[in-house]
Length: 426
Image (cartoon, rainbow, N blue to C red):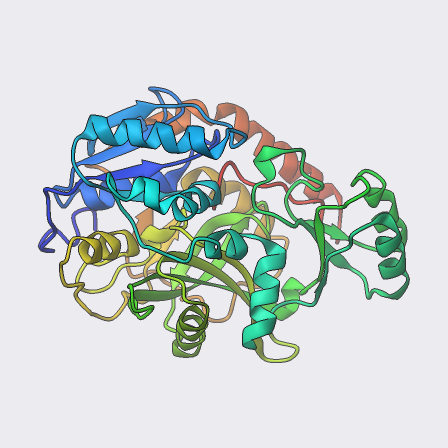
């Protein structure tokens, strides 16, 4: 599968730049994008934290720009840095953001960036609103899209009132996507078992809690579905894929560790209609949860950029969402073809601890195939081995932390520990 799509008629005169804001060097999504377009002969460039990130050592990378950022920089400084990179590349370049900060920056400073770069022109405030838990919840309510019941407390008194009427357990998440810019209220997704635990945690959230308190959808009664798509300027899907998440790390709420492509016309239609109504254009990564209790798909997340697991999805013509974006923005036709159902995606460095954790956690999703029709590995590729080897060298510390987390989770029989975020965007 390594060289799939090599017959696509891409414009090799238009390079692409992987844009990231913040420190998350072990990000397989950026490596996947470099390989996806690089194998087609597109010159690939990337912003990296240092010279020895996995992405920086891909054989398909034409050039790297070492630019450590935190996400706390002033937007004007970030825009100036991008324009400096654009001048060094020397020709119009496709921008491929790998996190919400970068996607929002590009959308909100489109006029300044347009002369040097190619990117979809979404409404300036829309990506920020989609990346926000509250903004997404409000959009879902306005357009009749199911989502988990949620409240957005403005004070500790609001939390006390909620604790008196809520049905537990509930889930606490950070309200805004940009948690790297300041101290987050919670670390990742946290399951809260009762009023006393909620009130105890909330004492550390400050006078204006930056959290969303959300209905808990029990994993025994739910299925996790993912949709990756690329939408054109007319909001119609250029490529749209559906799949089932089998395992994640941390368990049940973190980044995808293993997933399968599964045809789901109903979910594809729901996703396309929602995007048409809100007017989004570009690449999107949506997380849905099917609630068996009421038979509805509920939208959990809308990432207005490529997801780290986007290489799970490819159609029979060799098109993934990154290739679709490059073809569309360079005036080429995006070939239509069925998605490759049954295909599997595995993130090697997190799927082993996830596999051990999920053996304790009940049956696999009923729609997941028993046997894969081809496997795409996040890190290892025979034609590009250095990113995999670099990931191994750099993940010794994080790997040990994963195993310690797993042991702690195992000691909590029948409970879910607070779930920590993976390294970087999913």
